[in-house]
Amino acid sequence: MMHPGDREVGEDPTKLRTFLPPTDRPGTDSASEAIRLRPTLDALLLAIGEDLLSVGEGRSPEIRESVGRVLLHAADTFGSAEKAELWLRRPNVLLGAPPLQLVFDSPEAVDAELTRVDHGVYA
Image 1 (cartoon, rainbow, N blue to C red):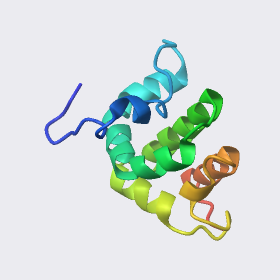
Image 2 (tube, helix red, strand yellow):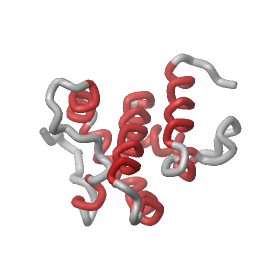
Image 3 (cartoon, rainbow, N blue to C red):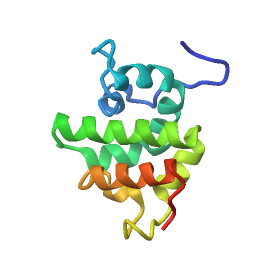
């Protein structure tokens, strides 16, 4: 469902949408979260799409799905695409680099850092 002001995902939505968590598994937490956060995820994909496509080229579907879950978590944690993008691009002391640079090689580490943010643990 589109809301006023929402934009569709970028010029090549097919490529960008491969990063979205699957919604074809009804009843799963990730499916319901992906549907609930779809406008935020679309806006986040628009903001970081070029970076995702350049780094994600040739990555396996499993890795792309893991990245999608991290993006879903970031959208949920920060509540807006703008805040999630800022966090993803900002250098992170604990991770040693901006999360967006690490999300393909270490999605678990980026996800763990988001969980710390969720719980108010800022080391």
